[in-house]
Image (cartoon, rainbow, N blue to C red):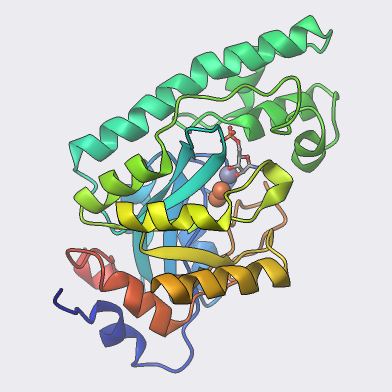
Length: 301
Ligand code: AMP
Ligand code: ZN
Ligand code: FE
Ligand code: FE
C-alpha cells in the first residue's frame, strides 16, 4: 500500500502536539455543543481533535464552522457494536466519507432502535415503582441527540431518584442491571468493514473498560484485524496500567496504531480534554491508513 504522510506535514511544524481522538457533544451525550467543543479544545491548546459522537455525525458541520487558527478537526463517530455473544464494543470510526450511505444507514438504524429501547427501559423502571417518562427524556435531551442511558440518568437526577450520571451507571443503569436493555447494533467486524469501505480508519475504543460490563478477550483482536481494524485506544482513563501494557503488546504484535484520548463529555463525565493523548507518530500511522485526506482546518473551509 502506498504510504501517505498527511499528519506529518502539519504536526512537524510546531513542537509538541496535543492530539485527542475521542470526544462527545450535545449531538450525543456530551454537554458542550460542537462549537463549544472546538472553543474548549482551543483554550486547552489541543492541536488535533476528533469529534466522535455516539452513532452520529450530526455535529460535523457546526464543528467545522467553528474552526479557527491552526486546530485540526478529525471527523468521526463512536459506533455502538454488539458481538454475537452479546459483548458491548465501541468502535471509533475516523476520517471516513460522511456521505457514504451504507455507513450512514448503519448509524441511523442504531439511532432509531435507541427509541424503543428507551421505552422498554422506562417500562421496566416504572414496573419497579420508579417514575420516569419519555417526556422527561425529551426535556433533558438536546434536540437531535443520539438518545442514550446518560439522558435517562439525567431524567432520574431531575426527578430526584438518583444523584448523578455516575451514580446511575453504578446501579440502576449498569449493563448488569435488571433495567438494562440492549439496542440493535452491528457486530464490531461489520462496523469496521463499513468504516473502511467509507475510506476511514477503525480504532477500538477502551477495549478493557470492564466497569461497563464484559470485555473482549485478547484472542478476539485477530478477527477485528482481519475485518480491517487500524488501531487500539490504549491510553484511556478506564484502563489501568496492566491493561494498557497488554493492549500495547497486542498493538505491536498486530501492527496496529496506538491511541490515547480523553473521551470528553463536557460536564457529563469527569474526563477532561487532552487528559490522554496520541503521539504524532501514531497519529501519522493511523491517518496514512485512510483513503483520502479528511482532516479539516479553518483554512480549508
Ligand atoms: P448507551 O449507549 O445508551 O448504552 O449508554 C452508554 C454510554 O453512557 C457510554 O457510551 C458512555 O458514554 C456513557 N456512560 C457510561 N458510564 C458513564 C458514567 N459513569 N457517567 C456518565 N456517562 C457514562
Ligand atoms: Zn458517551
Ligand atoms: Fe465509549
Ligand atoms: Fe465515548
